[in-house]
Image (cartoon, rainbow, N blue to C red):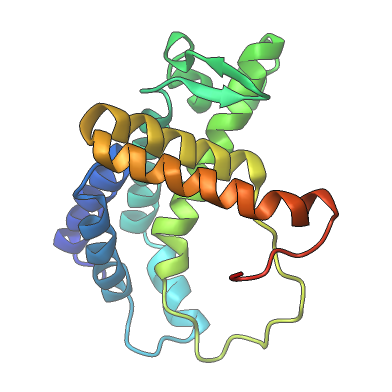
Amino acid sequence: MITNLILADILDNLRTVAKGGVSQAQAYANLRESVPALFPESPTQADIKAVTDTDEFKEFDATARRIFAEAFFNAPRVIDGNVIDVSVYGIETWAADKKAAKEFGPVETKVRKAAQDYVRVAFRQNVTMLIPAAIDAPEKVETEKLPDPTGVLALVTGALQTLSEKNPDGALALLNGLDSLVKYARPYVAERKPIPASK
């Protein structure tokens, strides 16, 4: 049975992760302990489903995704190479149902897609990936799902923007790291070659 106190603690840590800053790493470390605590030790697929199918978990799921959606709309985002002030569109763009979304203009549609990608990647990294593997899960076939470039870029952009406001030294460290990575990786990527783990 899900403990509401654990869910509340997870949501608090997700808010910290979404905001970024120096406490983000500690919040993620907390999530690595609290998310697995929702499930039995060495769970089966049925054990995991018994938790994720509860009303409490579904409500938690919706709240967690909204936390990341709100974070997305709190900062300008790079979408298709352009910096867009997504706060103009608001979280309603993400929350709209498919019928309402059909009435969106081209830019609003791109913002909605970028927000959905951001939320999906953030939820997977901070919740889904921390759920214990089922002991009776079938062996994985080599059909690895590749990272979504738009979602990953949105997360990095959001982290850099937040750090630039709240932790300039952290922003500079991230920017320098990205710069070094780009310089190192560009020759391999340009030639369509795998990037070695290290030089």
